[in-house]
Image (tube, rainbow, N blue to C red; front, side):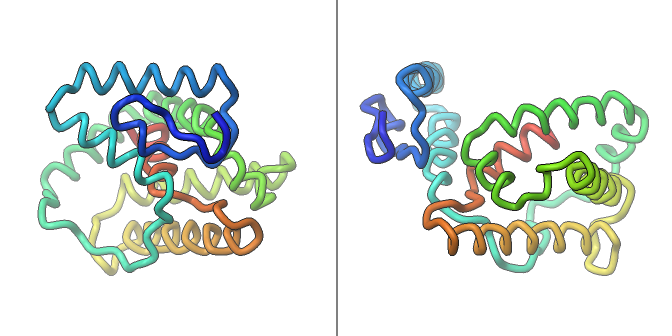
Length: 189
């Protein structure tokens, strides 16, 4: 399946790969999508999968952050407490998630482009900064004046800037909404 070919299986027909997956990768993707589609039927999961696939061509959001209407401060506090009680296991899970997401070609391309993980020293700095941001999210309140809010705003603006710069060097190389969803799932859960 080349860069402009599409899959012919259900919702995957909207999927356009920006990389060459090769025959096994393309087959695997078609099988996974077909199985998920069959399992989901008309349930919301089918819509979610289609939305995720469409997100491969949509760049990260450049706007300012605001809390969604469904935000529940009580649930956030419980999640933060759970994180604190299970700190070691949560961080091991996050490190495993980081390792897993670099196997996604579109994510790896942008990481290589930034040149911030190419040497042990730069990779160390980048991932320590990532850890520090994550700690802000799990230990601070989500209000516009908090360090967590400022951290999330900084991370979003950084991703948007990298995406913009990468696409100016190589059209189509973006940090996509799909990449962000995969990263969130792999790194945050």
